Length: 129
Image (cartoon, rainbow, N blue to C red; front, side, top):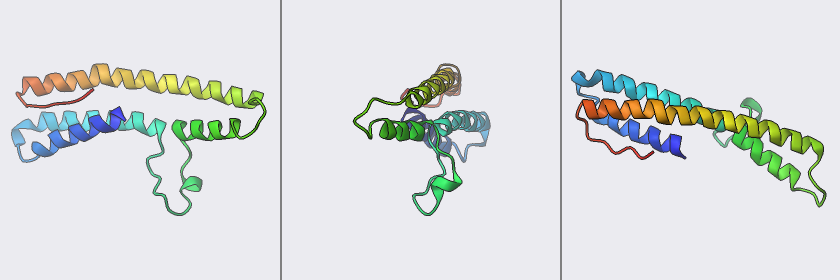
C-alpha cells in the first residue's frame, strides 16, 4: 500500500502547486517520484485490470496475482505441495525480494531527495513513509 499512499500524497502536493509557475522543479520532481513509485507498483499488481470482460487474457498476472494463484493451487488439495509448486514459490520469492530492493531504493534515495527539495523550497508537506 505504501507506493499508492505516497503517490496519492505527491499528487496532492503537485495539485496544490499547479498554478505556481515558480515551482516547476517541484512539479517535475513530483512526476519523477510518481513514475518511480508506479514502476514498483506495476511489478506487483496488474494495474490495467478493469474487472470487466477478458482482462485476464489481455494483461498478464503480476507477482501478487501469481502468488495468490500459487497459494490457491498449492492448498487446493489434501496432499503436500508438489515440487513444481515449491519451484515456482522460490522463483516468486526471488522476484519479490528484487522488487522490495527496488522499492527500498526509491524510498531511501528518491523519496528522501523529494522531501529535501520540499524543505528547501519551503513547501509544507506531510508524506508518510
